[in-house]
Length: 104
Image (cartoon, rainbow, N blue to C red; front, side, top):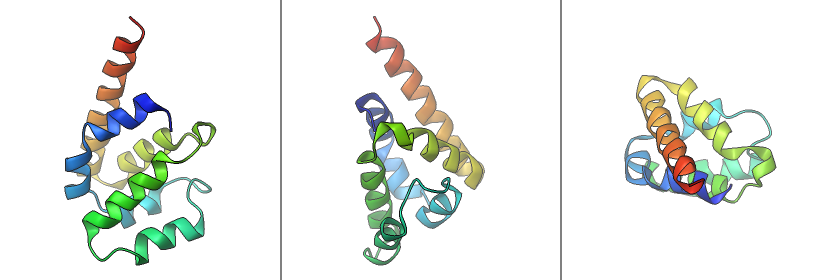
């Protein structure tokens, strides 16, 4: 994932870690973005929801940009429920602001 997109997520990292439901978000990620092994790592390797959220975000950060991990993550948040949709909106707003600043 490119640096600006990572930064947009990192700006809301604490809220994502605290509030996100990783299972529901993974269920809404488009096919092929996460491998079965990566899903299993998130689901089974971590005992708390916060740890699963950290792992999911970490995996997405390592994805190649051509897989569009940021876009897939934001879309999954939007599809999950109203609370996750709010998180998606603030992440997108942050990204747009960062992108505008970087072009100056």
